[in-house]
Each structure stands twice: as structure tokens, then as C-alpha cells.
Image (tube, rainbow, N blue to C red; front, side):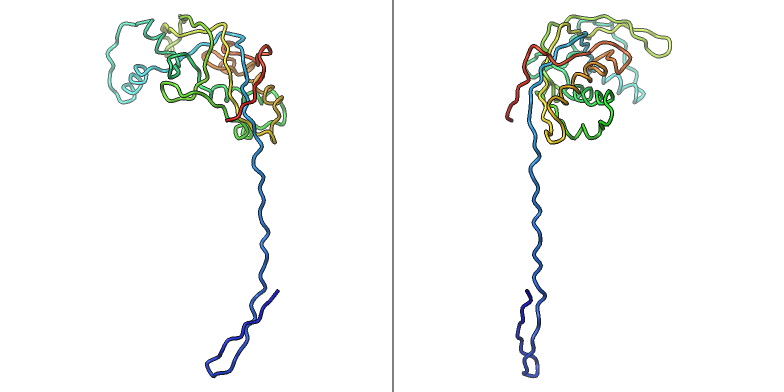
Length: 226
């Protein structure tokens, strides 16, 4: 409603001023995002091959980019093998959780009407901090040294020594938006990503058939509070 205010004027006479009516502003009410965090057990269906770039390899790459020649050293298979591990703070092997997130999001290619851009905003993969600062999930399994012949350049070849796990299993800790994604849909995407995308070296996404996995049907999915 409007109100009238009386004010004295310069000539002694009074004048009235009418204030504009107060406008009631509608309040904005926003509900909190509905989400839950689950621990999803997965089991490998083909070997997981790790290949973390060692500090030595990074230095050699930097030297090459800056035009410095790195003296060639004798190949040390054991050193190369050990440096290819991703390590948790306690020294146990792990694997980057973002690799599993990328695989899960890539699994959307198997379904029509699912947008990978939206999925990136609906799910968040959590892990333990590794020795190099990355978020890792713990890999359970006994590694063995793998020797492979790889192509170098157009006509060259070299030997690579990397850890391989088979059998292997892990647990994925995932927070996701329940109003946008059901739990069964999340599990379906994890299976699809493990089947058609994979993680590690020579995975299906890179024309290989290693690094595949599926949701472990013998272990339950656990809901946790963070």
C-alpha cells in the first residue's frame, strides 16, 4: 500500500509526498542436490597393464623438447618395471580414478540419448592420494613383469617392461546425483565402460583387449556417508 509523508516547504507551507508502494519480492527457494556415495566393487576380466611415466622418462622427454641430448644408458628391466607402477602412500599399487571415470562416461556411447557432457557433471570418482599426488583406487592382485616389443618411430622397435595384474579387482567410490541418474543406470554405465573402453595399456579404446572389467556380482554395492 502507498503512504503519505508531510514535509515543510521553504515558504513555510506544508507539502505532501506520496511514497511508492512497497513491492513484495518473491523468495527463491532451491532444494539441495540429491546425491549419494556408493562403493562399487569391480573385477578384471582381462589383464590390467600399468604404465606410469617415470621421472626419468619425463626428464628425457623434456631434454628432447629443449634440444638437449640425453646420454643413452643400459636398459634396466627391473628399474623400468618398478617405475611403471602407480603407488599409494603406503606403497601398495593403485590406479588413477579418473581413468575409471573416463571409461564409465565413455560407456554412454552404447546407449542412445545419453550425453557424456552431462554425465561428467553427475558423477564424481573419489580415491586415495597417491605418491605423485593423483587420486588412485587400490588395485588388489599380484603383479608380474611383462615384456613387450613396441614400435618406436616409423621403423624402430624397443622392449618395454611393465607390471601386469591378472586376476585383479578394485573398488570404485562414486558420488552421483540421484535426481539425474539411478543407481542401476550407474552400474550399467560402469559395466559398459569396463567392457568397451577399459583402462591401462592396450585397452579396447586404444584398439586392444586388455584392461576390461565388470561390476563384481559376488560382492555387494555399499552406500556410505562422507
